[in-house]
Image (cartoon, rainbow, N blue to C red):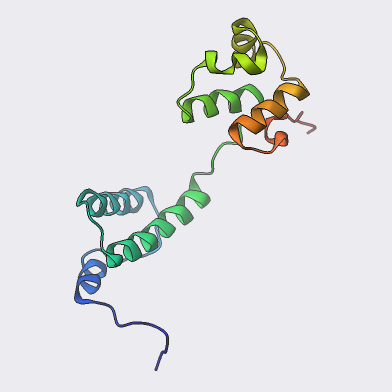
Length: 140
């Protein structure tokens, strides 16, 4: 007899019966799992059972994406561009760091390298470690 586990409710049993959580092995299964997640989220007010089930499905999606769709490693100006977009900021919002709009645009277009001071300011703004911005030369 297993101890420490609560007996699942009928609703939870219905969730896992209608869409049994299984490791995701291909793109079609990923899409089906994401569709199931969205259908639960779309209903609005979530129960504890919904949250538990979503955690399981989320872990399956996370595991699949980590193995099959690795995040690209961005450095330097590419990272700055991605962070701007993710943060809903405009290039003009970086003028306090780069001093002029021309300097901001040169950085974003890869025409100018980031200085150590700029890297430290960007790291503080985006709450990242400064080494995330250093471009590494390929030594292969």
